[in-house]
Image (tube, rainbow, N blue to C red; front, side, top):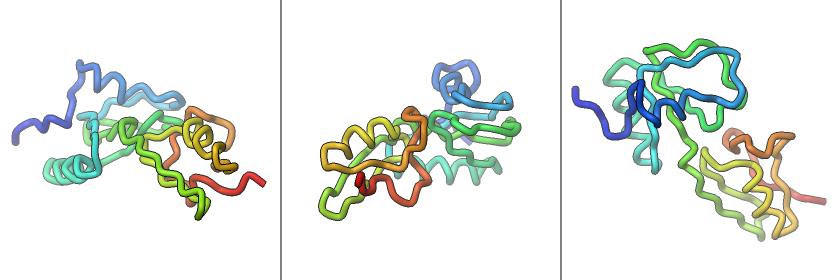
Amino acid sequence: MTQSPLLFSPGTGEYAHGTSPLSSSAEQHPGFVAVPRTAADVGEIVTEAAARGLVVMPQATGHGASGAVDEKTIIVDTSSLDDLHIDAESRTASAGAGQTWGTVNAQAERYGLLGLAGSAPSARSPGSPSAAGSAG
């Protein structure tokens, strides 16, 4: 099987970036780091991982990264998936998996809104049921 242009091996800058979480209790040594630029890229990466029998682990900044990551894993570095759309009328936001809470809140503030960021503005925004809510 040929190497996907989205997969990076040890020794590359993309691999080093993708395996350097901000908060980790374990070292990360995946088989590959994948760097998608679009949702279609994510689909290609998941398909490639399945074909290789590898586990897919999404990670942007690595807040909360824990546990062993070995050569049977592809870390999907989602930091480039940073789209952001704020709908002031419905008081909601749609944020890409690589978007930071600091950026979400800076944009949401323009509409009198505030995201559910917790205390780390550099943390990425995926996983929350609502990316922008009422400030009041």
